Amino acid sequence: MSPGAPTGGAGGSGSAKEGAGHWWAQRLTAIALVPLTIWFVPSMAMLAGKSHGAVVAWLGAPLNAILMALLLAVTFYHVWLGLESIIEDYVHTERRHVATLIAMKIAVAVLALAALFAVARIAFGG
Image 1 (cartoon, helix red, strand yellow):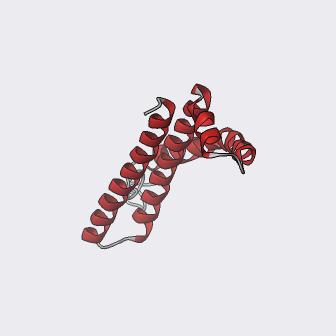
Image 2: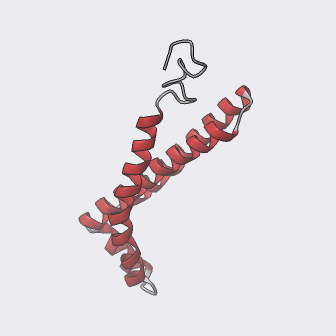
């Protein structure tokens, strides 16, 4: 392609300027969620109808607490990446774009921290 062609300088100038890395991160988090979900769904089915104490004891087990923390962390990061892509694609006004990204990032971070804190409290008996 010649330098004078209309698309000659367009390479690598997507809206996020890091499209490939973002794309790979979304795929890797999706792949990581598969085994975590395969662990989570039967675990929840097994706990259906159990007492609150039984569920707390289950989550207090180190392996379950670690897997739950991983599931939450990876899920929230995957949500972060997905919502970021949606905002990048569909919010075009600069001020609204920036405000929406900031609000989304704060909301996802607060929810992730709250969920991880809850798991830690149960796991460490707080």
